[in-house]
Length: 91
Image 1: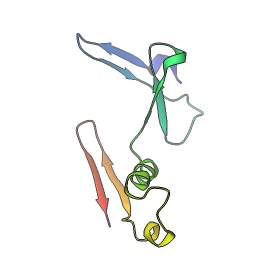
Image 2 (image 1 turned 90 degrees about the vertical axis):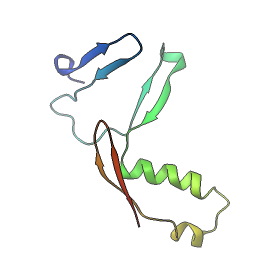
Image 3 (image 1 turned 90 degrees about the horizontal axis):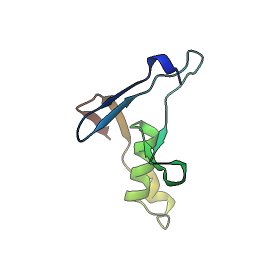
Image 4 (image 1 turned 60 degrees about the horizontal axis):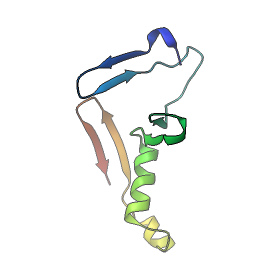
């Protein structure tokens, strides 16, 4: 993380934390963890094609599905992610 570029904004009922990667760090972030202390962290995934595919794979086709059912699942493509919307295309 790049400390000077990171930020914190606290309101009465919410908090926002802006994180910035260090200059040498590349690639998308897959997940983050948060909580009151290290022993009680909760994990959340960022929206990406891989994370959406993984989530839908577990919801739409549990482990007992056949291989042909897995192959017939829809193709999920994350087109755009902004603060107030997510655009996903299913094929």
